[in-house]
Length: 406
Image (cartoon, rainbow, N blue to C red):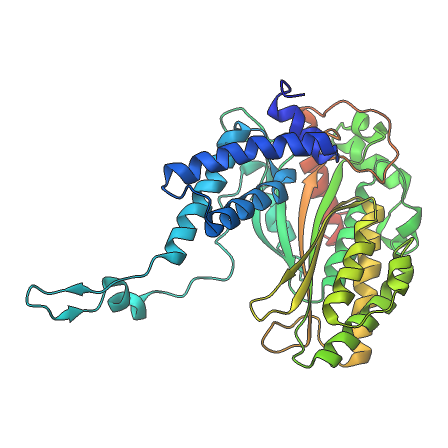
């Protein structure tokens, strides 16, 4: 297996092949160690080992977003270099300079600190590719969505992103409203005709097989309509925080939260165990969510204050977006009863649930496997298909916003 290319190993690793993951980690470690050695950070010290482990973790957490546009080792080199530079900045003590006669002067960084402008919470929107400029503008007309990053996957150089590009967005208010928008949007695009689960909520929006077929035919995309594989997926990333200083109250919130969504998690026997601390509650929920075949990753992390945070990520089709909406609705209902707010921050709320979404054309099941779907083997879609998918999304968004009629 050592002769297999990095690209094939990545695909196998994303699918969960343990041997591929192990071999890919060994290859990534060699690249990371080379970067650290080049920057004079080699050795067996604990700090170096911790940094190496952090870089490796970042590489594998970002693996589903690897675009194959550059060699894997080049990609690892960039991540390792950026983290090594940041590590040095964080650990280097700024020393004051001295005049010739011994008097200390404040360092330049200290003298200019008060003039440093405050940076925006989100980076400025990157230049939008022409293929999706009007689509991004349409999405921003929704009162429930704010886009903050996008890529059509069609650079001018002629190469294109086999993952299909993305439009990243965050809710502007209650995430349930954003999820309802996305469920409705996928319902309007569902070429697999699995719309029964949400059809009753969107009868007035024409969510029927005939209406969907008409939309595809309008763009001469009948072949896409007949495909057994969805054309659009949503990358969903969720963070759940409970920032309550009182331990018993924090434990109670986590327990009630788990109880509110228990029936939405199949085979959740772990949730019936005795829980004595907030950390145990989060790890219990983490273990249960990890058993779901459609969840890409689940992580237990801590805030700067030491509070536990649960993060999970999934690639969602229509049915999974509906599941996420059910989860969000249950949590929102629980928060309302408990008198908490789910839209607050660490400073002003006991509970926060943060959602981030990325709308993506679904081009290649080999690169983004959806294990919860039973689909026939499908060839990767072409560049022509790719552009038509973006156009179909634009038609559906316009209809969702009530700006056009089919």
